[in-house]
Image: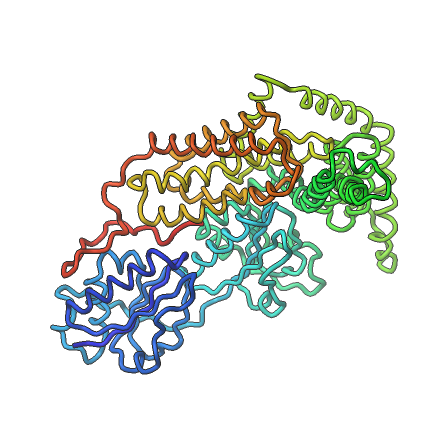
Length: 611
């Protein structure tokens, strides 16, 4: 009888982790071996291995889909495999582990042990560093970070990923880590400062590419030429370094990326302002008109201060994304002028791009003696950039854009009947088409921008439509579980929570696996939700939060019909999945029959539940 220890772990730490542990325990007992299994998951470490267990073990099995610490197993034969393999081909996994263990008699191993792998020299794994960031800094940011971590682990690299989200930078990179790194990956849809990476291999890509193709992104970063040693100062912008590279499509998506940077910084002002305005209505729709009252103070804070800063912040950070800090002053001032003129968010967008490109041109064109260079960022660029943008906004651009904005606002506010339904259906379908991608963000940005003009119905339609894809998938996994694998049914629970919070990305794992069936069903449900929201005339004052903002009085009105629109969209998505999805013939996550070895899989099973 041989003695084994094992660790099982998958990304969610629920289904695959527990099933792999149970399969190893039962199959080892049937083969006449003793085994102790530790599970690592969302509930922490369960049945931890003791030092005595490890010392007595003939071999170690690491059936994991995420990184685990293996330093405590030093000197022991280790077999590394996936949780799916441990579930589906348990007997072979145990046999292969024992086949590498010294002192174990051949008859104790599996009847058909695999040949020993060729020993490889042990090297210290290289280090990669990365930054992920998306406009809202919620779902895509952290999903891309996890994808990069798993891909780096599979390639034998260590990686540290800094996430720049809505609550600031987390897991921040240190100077020592950057210095040690073999390459830097920037997976972002918003502006990320890169001056600290001067002299490093640097790959810029979108957060979507980092999420969907992490292995290829890492390969491209490592394939960049080694940085050339320079005797002078490091370049101020890592984009200028020969070791930096942006994907070809980034040149095309540059303006889009700058726009999303502005939107990401504007969102907290919109959320705070919208909810404070809604709270002022708790005391009565016109209670804020009474000076000195609490409703008046709430309206002053939310409607005048927070909403007053929306357009300047949008313009300022569009300019910042283009020209870095030199663009901030002309961008903010141009945005303030757009707000005063009445040009709204369209004027803010124009002012932001003008300020950014003018400031960048001034930065790159003006040449001063070295002892006067310090005047450029604090005097010359702010003065000339602000003067140029201000004069253009006042005399050339502001009035026409204000007329366009006023016309658009009047048209949207007068929309009723079929026109409103058509707009709601279009915005809804856009929200579900790529679930957080460029089309989704275009619809969302349009709705958020209209809040500054007191147009609230498109925002309500967009949020309802963004909630229904993950909610519909979560409901479908419960109503028709035969259409989904066990792994997908576990992921459905997480998707339901994300849907309630208005995080459409909860549907991405399902759409990525079966896009031709999932995306049409999601688009149908979102179109229905958006159309009904517009039909009912629902208005939403907060651009995020899902059901958690519905409890605030007057954040959305009317509330009952709005909830009905969300429920209807969810049901339509579920019905679409019931029609389009096919029954799963054999669940690849099913545990093997006791005492028998499951057939060797021809292709790897999914490694863990998606988020």
